[in-house]
Length: 234
Image (cartoon, rainbow, N blue to C red):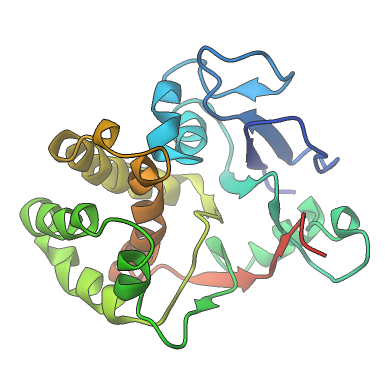
C-alpha cells in the first residue's frame, strides 16, 4: 500500500473522513483558537497569509512539513468521491481506491469544470479584479517564458480543473509548489492584497486555481480525473 496523505483544509470544526489517509488541517491557524486539528502554523509555514492565499497555506505546510510518497489537498466541504449516495461522507474515496488509481497515474485531479459561455479569463474578470491576473502573465513572461503559451491557451479555454484539489506524487508536488509559490510571492510583492476588500484580497488563492492546468499541460503530466462532491449541497 502506498504512503498517501491528503490534507483537508478547514477553518472550522466539521465532519471529517475517518480514513487515516486524511489529515484535517486548520488553515490560517496562526493567532486563532485551537480547533483540535493539525495547524498550518507549525514548522515552516505561511499561516498568517491565509486571508490572501486561502487553502494554499495548508498546501504550503504540507509541502514543507509532511513526509509521504503522495500528498493531496481537499476541502472540508469538497472531497473526492468514488460513488454517489445519500450520505456523502460514506462516498468519500478510500485509501484503497486512491492507491489503485495511482497504480496507473502520478496525479489525480477533479473532474474538469466546464464554463460553456465564458472563458477562464472572462469568468475571472467578471468575478474578481482582473489586474492581478494580468500581472501574473507578466511575471510568467519574465520568470518562466516557456509557460507563457500554455498560460494564454488556458485563459482562452472554457474548462479547467478547479478548487486547488489534487493528489500528487511528492516529487511532482515539490516541482509544482516551487513554481507556483515563486510566482505568487512575486505577485503579492507587486500587488498588495491589503488594498482590497476581504473578498478581493483572496486573489492569490483564486489565481492559483487557474495556474494548475498551466503547469500540468506544460509539463505533460499524466493524470486521472475523479469526481468531487460538495458536502453541503443536497
